[in-house]
Length: 226
Image 1 (cartoon, rainbow, N blue to C red):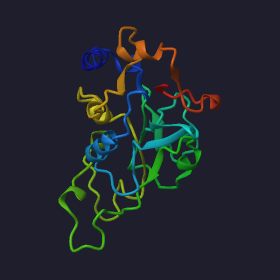
Image 2 (image 1 turned 90 degrees about the vertical axis):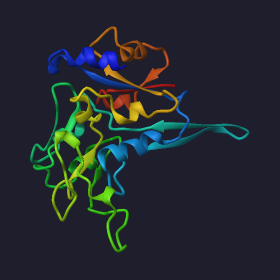
Image 3 (image 1 turned 180 degrees about the vertical axis):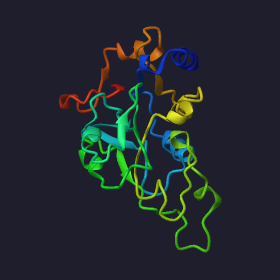
Image 4 (image 1 turned 120 degrees about the vertical axis):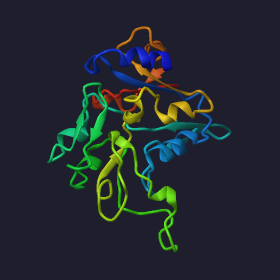
């Protein structure tokens, strides 16, 4: 995947089409991706870019369990963008849906519009509220969108809507998303769908592939293998 990533980065940004493929047969529900994402983006309580949803399938006695990691689906036709009254969220040329924390007014229309429940509001909570002092990891600046976002007072990203962005700051630096590099089951794949030789292009052609709520026509760029 790293070679695929480097090959994609050699192309102009408007010629890349990032996609993620998650193999549910390989996912063991360890939530390492969730934790890696929280650590990478310095996420506060209640903000989870990559939850792993547990599903029970079948009826007793023929019951199985499945885990479904659910990041932002990075829709090609994102319902969250058109409802933003201040144009604080939009789709980059490479297809990643992003948020301008400086422009976001925290109205949360986009949270309501997202059919996947993939957006969260930063209420300014900390893990060690009501204790003598915040821990150092809680005041470390988030590197999202190439910035250094300190969570102090009422400044952004506190009071903003937040979401998965495929670790755009890592991609721009030539690194795969944190959730991909920490998956112990090798269940998550990432690359350029516009590259016919990439691993994700091969996996998207698998007969097991499906996307969430395809009937809505949002054209997610996260694919699952059943």
